[in-house]
Length: 97
Image (cartoon, rainbow, N blue to C red):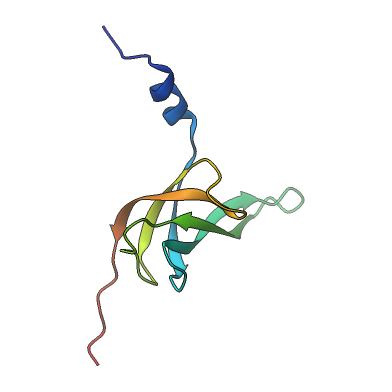
């Protein structure tokens, strides 16, 4: 078996990938993504939903509020932006108005 083992490929595999929902798209080329994960509460042994918001770079301004997106850990792009939108996973159905 031959597998490519370049330093760039290894670095890309170490980056974290998260899936979350866009909560704000008001900024230019930036979206706020809320990621929900389950954490085991140590005392009661119950799972608790933990919410965390990340600012992610959206180069083409394609993400809208309510979209489910996948974000990838990236080098710092600004003071608070360290994630990049990789792909649009799901777009909710538009309501008829």
